Image 1 (cartoon, rainbow, N blue to C red):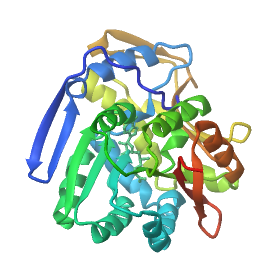
Image 2: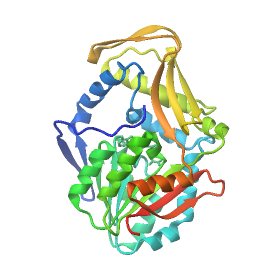
Image 3: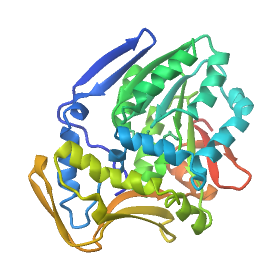
Image 4: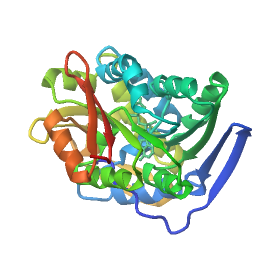
Length: 344
Ligand SMILES: C[S@@+](CC[C@H](N)C(=O)[O-])C[C@H]1O[C@@H](n2cnc3c(N)ncnc32)[C@H](O)[C@@H]1O
């Protein structure tokens, strides 16, 4: 299943946790009591085409596995995007006239964010950083960042992107640099993709900027290897979803009865990831009272990762009301970083 935009929750309660005078974060109680996870899993695993939402990849183990994926030889995405970010530091600085707050969607380990923080913390007396991530990794990452940058203040939001954006909207921040890296937009299907870009557009004011990292269409072999690495880390990352359901919802998935599948769908221009049941069997998910029947070779869909072309990015931006200020690419045309504003 692709990422889907979250529907407003009926009850939303947040805890504010202050770690240091320069770092606090908000965390939804729905994440704490697992209610979102249980509700979504009981829906998604009882559809005709079973799926697990990709946001559930990122429990503690999943976030660690993702960091391992980022340094794999086959996973060109992270090092290529980082290489572009490093090469455009000066140019980026020139686009930022005045002080900017940094808002990041899916901040993760914030390795790439550091290139931007270096620009901002050198130029500005102080920098406000608002990372939004569903993963607990936000805490450790933010503690490290505020230790490394004396003039950085961090207010994190541990929740889904859309909820984080609602928080940000309420703050009415002047001059925002919003960043969404890692081609995570590609996890949405094309319709959700557009809705999401429009949400970001709605948040932007005249001087605001939006930096988006997107993976480009390329040779199928290169793409498929990136999601099917020789060390089997992506396979572990995918299978960890089942382990998470075992641990958090008292299920008895036998991981040996599943295999990781990833392929490039050339027509749709997307990598599709699945878990394939190797035999007909039944799994019990006690916390949601579900006896799950799986056929031999049945697929559970876990992720889409759309790939883009530069003309496609421009069309998409225009439809969302975003104006590309600059498009940077690496020498092999593997990856694009696009800076948008709303001004003509
Ligand atoms: C592919 S990783 C990218 C991390 C980092 N930005 C990078 O470029 O390396 C996606 C990040 O977004 C977070 N994430 C995934 N789905 C999310 C959602 N629906 N809402 C909020 N965060 C999400 C994950 O926890 C993870 O840290």
